[in-house]
Image (cartoon, rainbow, N blue to C red; front, top):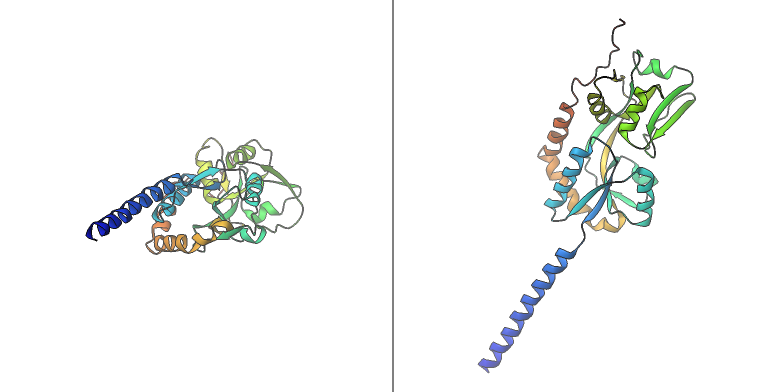
Length: 253
């Protein structure tokens, strides 16, 4: 009887150990979640590591991958992406295949950048035949008066180079992205006009197939927000844009 009990206990112990080994192997074999982000965006330098850290805290592996917006839309519709690192608020209204994590990553301004002597945003918008540059596939949620000629490119760097070459009168960009790129082009008198066109919050989005993760990721991000971690990280990045440009035109020579 005692021998039979020992045999049975040994069986259960071996079965338990085998389950642990198999469970560990299955977890190791799980593919990381793939999140898209805008190619060439200077903000990726903080956004990508941040999203990796958020999911690490939740015990989940992720891989941020640069994907152009139009391709991103197709991949979301096909379920080929697990989510998006960050998008403007209301993105889910036009893309029902995603769900929003309700803690904002950042609040940004949409602004106009110029290289000429335009003094401010109202003066720019009063021009006739205004040529505006913007990123292809990005909805800035703007309502601008009058007729505008839009020229679209795929990456933020292309947008600023197009402005410098005079192909457009102004480039429409997220403030921190445009300011960082302006700092990288010191030979060009790129300025951000005031006031900004509008303010938008940026959120992280998951594909609906991962809706079950929303509470866990929300809890992690809310804790990081309450600790001031998210705010400090973005404040540090913004300090890197200080003095990159001014909002006043250069004096005439």
